[in-house]
Amino acid sequence: MVEKMANLKIAIVALVRGYPNRKHLYESLIKRNNSIYKNINKFRNNKADIILFHEGNISKDDKDYISSESVEYIKFINVSEYFEKISLKLEEEEKFNLGYRQMCRFNMFHIWNKVENYDYILRADEDVEVLKFNPHIFEYMDSNNITFFTGRFSKEIHRKTNETLPDYLTKNTNLDVDRIYNHKFPYTNFYASKVDFWRDKNVLSLLETIALSDKQIIYRWGDIPVIGGVLNHEQERIRLFPKLEYRHISHDLIIKNNFVRNLTINSKFNPISIKESFLKQILLKIKTKISNNKSYPKYDFRNY
Image (cartoon, rainbow, N blue to C red; front, side, top):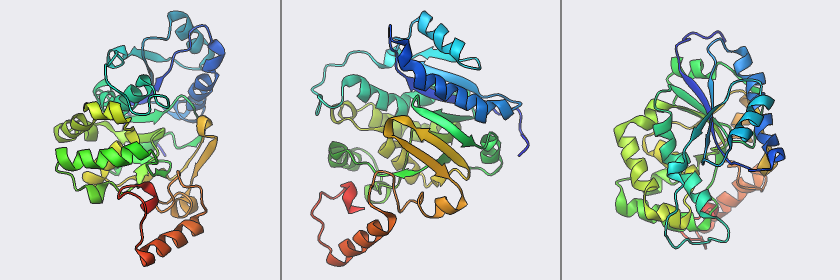
């Protein structure tokens, strides 16, 4: 596909961790950076900016090292103002530290203020290696008025989130929670989206109500149900990339998208967090509907 609108401003972004005095731990990030060039920017006349947000713990020496090992220019942006100490009693603190919760907050809300000058972003987390990708997907999105592409659908499997987030949304927003909290959310470690959608004042206000609540930090609400819930609320279709292959290193998964897989394995009826086979899930769903005997809390992912 030929680039039809060379004036689109594109950013490929990630919030990354710093590893002082442990340069070998940047290996996955460097592999990610070079896979982006190999599969995306190498084929684009209008290059996407490569932006790495960080918490202020990547030294100049480490930046120089990452840049020297990466094929193209990397823009580092310090977002440490969003990672200051907060005095709150955290649920499950032994599992999820404060920095993790603030990372979730950044990825659901603050990121949209940092990319306001761009038309589209591709979020590709530091543990992602791109294997196949349409380098002109942004032009395709623009010409077809598409807001969001992801590689897979995902349920929210975190128990505390499912117990507390729907209740918070019911009490503090006008969302139809039964409709939008459907566990057909996007797998957010790799997605493309139109920035203007998230910069809309009503969407930003809704995100702020959720993300800046103390409960987001206390209960560790992640970005998957928030991004997915907002898209569902706005009735923006969560679409699957028509052509894609990437490795999600930390989850030991390879995500593949094509026409057949998007109708079957990748469909919204087979979210990535469920380990049973596609057929078994359908049979279990039918059995549950017939018996009408749900033993889990209302918004538990196993009910969907």
